Length: 256
Image (cartoon, rainbow, N blue to C red):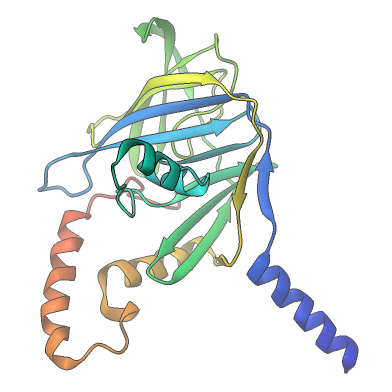
């Protein structure tokens, strides 16, 4: 019985305190992006940060990157600007040892899932110059969309925005043919500093359960179980509006 208790406590320690995601990157890339989050609403602009090497990487919104690397408070003091609490796309994408991991913070919940992402690219001879770099065209069908990418072999890191990797070079531009989601490199630099992401307290779910849980936390009153009846109707109306403002997710078909 004593051994069982020790094992239980050890497992709980690992669950709540976990281990860190760490690797040594070779490059840091900043993308500017336009995001059509909802069909009937204006596009939103957001910056994203990609830090990685040819095997491992971290991708997140710029504000979340500052938080995750303990730079938010320092940058705020220096600039006098207080950063917003979250980015439009709040999830962090991390890949290590061939497995893609997705982490998200929602109200008081810290959730994650992992998956094997396989992207089949078709290369084309068409090229274009992006930020002074010659890039080659590639295309794929993924997540219910047709995606066009421009990559450069001058940067051998097989990386790109979000979960898009697998090309023989860094992706400088990525967009779907509806132009709902459009990412373009605006800055890149060598980065040899070790990168570390704190995994503490994230509850692992299947992707299906993760999507269900995050939907409930974002767009229903499930995250507010103690709400009184007087506030319930008003809050539900707000959530209905939020649904319409975010009814065009990047992954139209999450399991494609």
